[in-house]
Image (tube, rainbow, N blue to C red):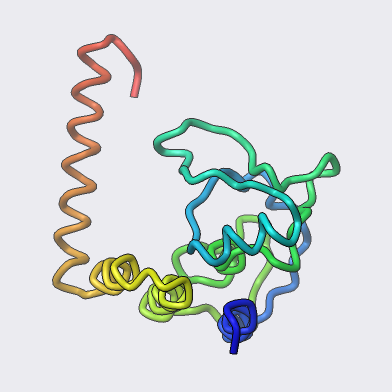
Length: 160
């Protein structure tokens, strides 16, 4: 089975959702497995750079068309497919899935996408993030980063 078939098989594990197409304002540079990025570039000619809103500031996804629809919808990456379907990423526009994926299921699907890409190190990190022992450490680290960011903003006279 080739990489594209493996991705399609992985995506078939995601519960269906009746998407109303209103969530375009949440589309921005996101990270994805290498195989997904390559597929989008090769098939649709769209280069979605690595990045997140948190670090690169607000911007829109290069795959978002003029009519605010996804131009790569049929081959969109896993993270986009999880929007509205994962417990931690509910649709804010009222779209509801057949069932919600648990946090553990969501992390495992993300790890499998990296496995398909041949990036076992990233898959291992994703699985570690889902480990309850690591989850508490990650939560504490995020809190510490936020505290440090607030302090830095105050020093620079910025509102947080």
